[in-house]
Length: 135
Image (cartoon, rainbow, N blue to C red; front, side):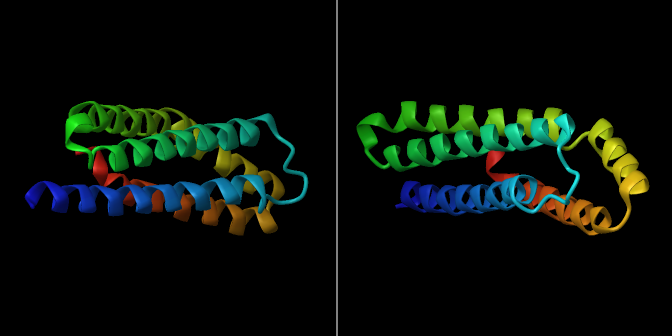
């Protein structure tokens, strides 16, 4: 019974993380301001896509963990994917160089970029808050 409750909690946390990453990706891919054809933004979008792929793999592994004879391997794979998300997130999306570049873009372009960067920051915060499944 406790095992099932733990899997249910993991499922909710993975769902939250996946949704936060989906919103972040949508902001990078679809909501970006005009004149936003920058390699920097393409890299962030690609990294978010990679994180979404890892989240999909983690959710699949978590569902497989319900079959007790495969639980150990499935949970290990789930943890591996969540660790990869955490690594990519901190390395590629939520670091000082990214924050500095966003500041530079806001100063350079102003206008719609101010709101867009604010939305990116909100979505990054959602991802940080949803990444509690690492433990």
